[in-house]
Image 1 (spheres, rainbow, N blue to C red):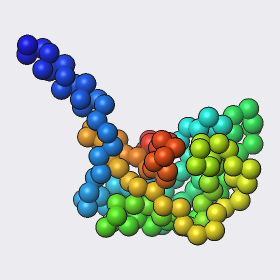
Image 2: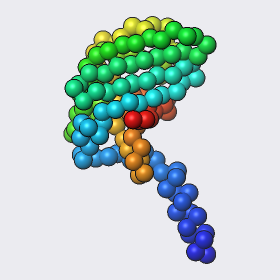
Image 3: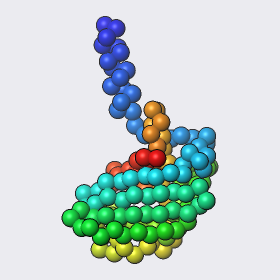
Length: 136
């Protein structure tokens, strides 16, 4: 019985949903390098502590690298990240946008989350189910 309870706890923790980090996150928690894997390619997003960001996109089957820079802010009260004029690679269905190389006008907002075990994520569109995982 004890093994069953321990096993259930391990399963529950490993499948725990994203947990909002709440108001305790600071800029140095959020700054870092994130990666997102799409059906069409990979995006690297580096949030620098000075408020600048770098996006690097590589599409599958292509050796061309698309880079874009801009500014970002961390909104503590919402636990969110706002990118000013970022690239938006996929649409609301996870399909590559024809104009993905053109920065959007305005702000791209993302929720910042941390799992129980400490891995951080950015989620720009929860409906698509894609998350940028912090790797450094």
